[in-house]
Each structure stands twice: as structure tokens, then as C-alpha cells.
Length: 586
Image (cartoon, rainbow, N blue to C red; front, side, top):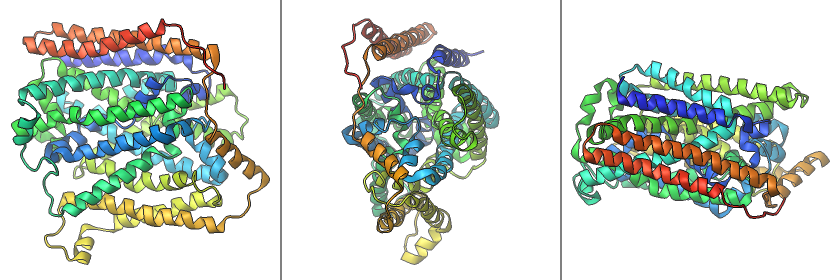
């Protein structure tokens, strides 16, 4: 058994241990799905960041960085913009919704019928995305260990499922924090190696094959500019709507939610250059690397990051990178597991099947069963995506977001600003959005656009992919968004019961959540202590890898990586020993 496999297996054991250590934290569905709303900002910020970061970053996005240079960074800067708006306004508001699942807020705003539309409409987007991320992880695992993709998808999916079922949101968020530290440490170390080996960023850019700033296969710069504009619009909508408020529902108060958004924003700004310096290096100095991954077909470019680690980094680093891949995928799959299980239990099983008569014990059991079911569905989707040989992971992710996810965001985003629309405006807008998605995402083809606009030269494959995303998002803003605005003119006074629910929603929206006394302080200390100890163990584990036979510089790489993680753990342990300040109670 080689050292890389040993490292991955050790990391598996570490992840399972995290789930086991946090199993006692979940005694209710509120604990299981959102940590009881008692988590500290650095844990919440880590999981907010990690939900936008997955193995896809090292596969599909790295492949895009390899071919098109800086262009891929724009997508992550759009994420940073979304998090900045979270920090500036939305994150505290989302925490102040005081719900267990985001769909509960939609029920208050749009009523029971819309609740069911959004319950069954919101799950496909995140489940498909989780399947995409699982497939991205499988690309790496299969290429490294020469295991069939199908076997890899099933095996890794089951391993990732175990931890989520064991500890619920506490385990997932705790692991997100540790995994964020490991990923940043590994990628910083890889970026340093790329910088040194490439003789600086400037030299890497100068040797880049193709146009570094905008990439290749581009005839119309206007299409690229349009893509940039609508990617920022899309990510603003994705980050700042009630459905995705789940990122901050677990924060202990409004201020911790704001700080969490700030942390995610900073990480998303500084991260891209760190993450993509290695694939840029590969383009400049190892442009023919894909020949070694012929078995991956036209997805060979997605192995650019792996090629860098195998060619440049010391023995054992591939295993550590694989551990980081599992870390990223674990955090991303949470949106398809824990979150969707919560929506199913809280917004369908409890109110519809059990008519609010189920005990908390029954709901906890049903929650774990639902999590397992979601996990198996995600594995099946990962297998299906693997069969789509002709479509890149980068295109799949953007199309899923534009055609499925974005239409759902319009009513829940605008609905918190335009109060007086009828309850049916929620579900009716989804139906309109579905027709818009069908026309611009399926019916409309590149040939139609080329013919209609009389383009010469015709659109390249990349340009059509970018234009398709831009057209879809623009159509949703104008048509789907316009339809929702028009429903304002059909508003009629609500029933007394419904008006009370809407009043409660907007009252909560404007009322800050404050942390609560000694019980919360004790829990804060436990969070710092347990996470500090886990992080310290991870740091020592990485430091021990410096003992692997390598060149001196290879050993230094592990020392740098391990030290970054270890110092974070020590700081948390020290913070847990300090007396906490007395805080106001809500």
C-alpha cells in the first residue's frame, strides 16, 4: 500500500471521528439541521465558504484555468461579491428569520401551497450540484489510484454519507472548519511551489499558452463581457435570497452571522490566485500533460491540478491533496444531504404526512433515514453525470445554476422587498421560470442564434456556452422577474391568519438576534476546545509527513502545511481557556 492511500485512509478515520465526537450535540431536529442556531462565526464562515468550494474547484474549474487562464477567477470574484453583500446587509437578516429551514420562511411569506412548490423545487438544484461535485472528486480518485470511475463514485459517496448521518449539522460544520484549514494549507503550499518552480507569477503568465486574461476560442469579446455581467448578477441572487439563508441560520446571533459572511468574502477574494496558480503553471511548462490521462477522454484537462501535484510536489502530497478533495466534497454534499433532508422532514413529512403530530424522537429517526436516501440519490446522479462524456464539469455547474437554481431565487429575493404580492405569486413565478429555462436552456440552439444574428464567424463552443448562461439569466431577470413584479397589481388583502404569519416574518427580519448568557458561553468554549484539539491533531499529522523520504524542499513543504494548521489549532485552544465576556440575552 503506497503512502498516498495510507494518508487518505487516515483522513477517512479522522472525518468519521469528527462525526462521532459531535453526535451528542444533536438532540432535536433544530440541532441536527442547523446546530440549534448556536454556532460561532468562524465555524459558520467556514461552512458558508465551503458550500461554494468543492472538488470541482480542483477539477472543472482547474481545467478552465488551464485552458482560459484568469477568466475562471471572475466566477469566484462574483462569489466574493455575493458574500460582501451578505456582510453588508443580508447575513444578519437571514439569521433573524429564526427558522430551522429556509423553506419555513417561504411558507410564512407565500403560504402552504408555495411551501410545497419550493420544497420539491429546491431539492433538485442542490442534489444535482452535489452529484456534480461527487463526480469531480471521482475524476481525481480514479486518475490517482487507477480505479474505475463508477466504483469510485459509489465508494466515496458512501464514505461521505457516514459522517453526515452520524453527527448532523454540528459534525458537518465542524468538519467544514477543519477541512477549510487543511485545504487552505495544502493549496497555499502548492501555490508557493508553483511560484518558486515557475520563477514568479510574471514568468508563468509570460509563458502561458494562449491569452491569459480572456482565454482562447473567443471571437466576440462582447459575449465574454455579457457573461461577466450576468455571472455577477447570478451570484448576487444565489447568495442573497431566503433559500440560501441556511448558511447563516446556524449562527448564534446576528453579529456572528455578519462576521461569518466577512470571513467567507475574504477567503473567496484571496483564494482564486492561490488555487489556480498550479494549473497556470501546468499550462506554461507542462502543456502536454493531458496525454498521460488519455483514459479520461475530453475531460483530461480537468486533471491539471493533479498533474502539478504529481510532477512538482513531494511524495505523500498527492494523498494529502486527495484528503483535501474529500474535505471539499464533504462540505459541498452537505447542501444535498443535511439541508435537503431538513427541508423534506420539516416542510413535508411533519406538516403533510404526520400533520404536526410526530414526536421529536420520531423526527430525528426520520431525519437520518432521509439523509441516507438523499445520499443514495446523489450517488446515482454522480453515476449519471459520469456518462455525459461530451460535457465539461464547468459547463454542467453553470447550466444547472442558470436553468434550475436561478428561477427559484427571484420570488424569494424580491418577495422580501415587495411585500404585497398574492400568495400564488411564489409558485406561479416558478412555473413561468420553468418555461423560460426550457426555451433558453434546451430549445434555443447555437444554430438558431447564428442564423438570427447572421454571425460570421459563427459562435465557438465556448462562446455559445457563455452566451447560453448569459441569455438564460437575462431572460429570467426580465421575464421571470417581470412576471413577479406584475403580480403586485393582483394583490388582495390576506386572511387574518396569513397576515399574522407575514407580520411575524417581517418583524423577525428586522429584529436582531442576540446571544444568550452562560449556557451559550459554555457552548462557545466547547466549540473552541473541541475544534482546537481536532485541528491540532490534524496539524501534527501533517507535520509527521515531513518524515516521508523526500528531498529537503519536499520536507519543508509538509512543515509549512502542517504549521499553518497547527498554529490555528493552538490559537483555538488558547481562546477556549479565556473567560468569555458576559453577553446580553435575547
